[in-house]
View 1 (tube, helix red, strand yellow):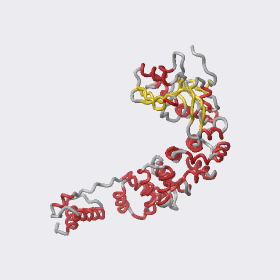
View 2: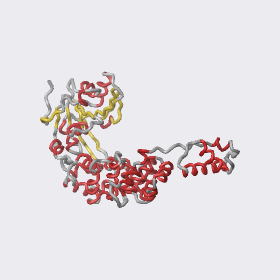
View 3: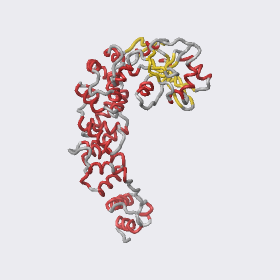
View 4: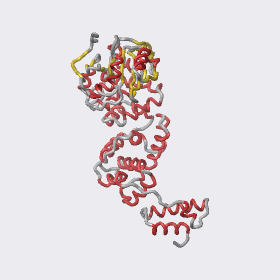
Length: 421
């Protein structure tokens, strides 16, 4: 029987469905035998201990990458060398991917990337990770191993760097953003761990060395986290939010957006929340596009928000709101309405704003029923005249409240073509 490594603690995940069913136990059976060990590590263990949903499952092993590939292929699994230079092989079982990484230690770091050496020591591997709550591992029998005090920090809902916070940040400056993002997701106190904040402030210049894509990914996860509001306030107080976004932050607007989303039963949306946090005018959308290297679709949504939120009001009335929904589409309408609500002077319980923002949930705008052929039959020639007739007819159809009966449509066609019905 293989000797148990040091660091074993009393907490157990024995019998957990995600650990004992499906493809994962088959993978662990192949890797955790014949002189090698394998465990689930990181987020899956953390979430399981917090009774949260377990998503991606990562596995660590004492086996070197070549041995991992040999074993999984012999078992009939697919292996993909996604990061084999750093010890990572993606193993696909029944279309389910697992990242399998050999235990390692950092040999050299530059604040962005690390050179690693493979090893067999679970404690050393755990201590190279960022936070104590991410350094937990679980064997296939459910035994949990804690080498850095992660269980105590989980119980306290505290995000704490492993070892010296300054050193962990110097290894990868993205950990500044990860510190706040994990606090927003798993922390319980209003203010993050003081030592961590001090280290983040001291290392903030290192954020400039990071790729904008990595920064964007962390920001988008942070703004939708359960405790994003107090966490962003802490970042602003520390002078870090200005550094990340490159402009003014509208924290009250962000808080109100979170309340408005919840009021109409919508899940947090990262682009919409980023707009509430950082977009007041069109120039803000352009700055964030460049600063965070947003996708074109994300940039277009922010640009639309910058122009549209001021134009929303419950005073429009239902017919005008339905017409606007038709022209904007459900997503843009919801974006504009929620941001308008967030920046209004009313509360999240306001019935009029609630009705406006929730309109796409209870009403689906119809499709314009007239086609070019309907006008060609009336003698309208193809070209600019046909386009003008279609636009005039659509405007009249919207103004009339989207009628669908043949008589009303005939009148609209006649008016657009200036001929008798």
